[in-house]
Image 1: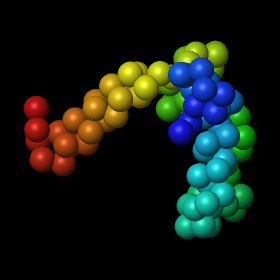
Image 2: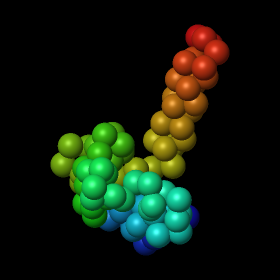
Image 3: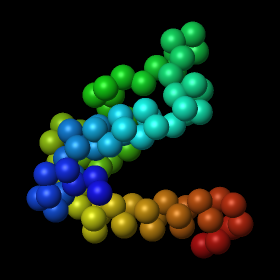
Length: 87
């Protein structure tokens, strides 16, 4: 779904396009997150911890489904650990 050019990997440009689509479809998210008065403005090309994790410091890496699923598994484990003390 995120792999717009069909090469089996997601690059930073594809990831940004998907983020833009999601933000435009989420009225609640836009209303609460994109406010210049709070300093929470969303800008294209913004380097976040997540984009650095997925694509590297230079943002030239590629995200594979294998790497994404591993990230998702670790994230779910860490959230459960925080919520209920699962080791």
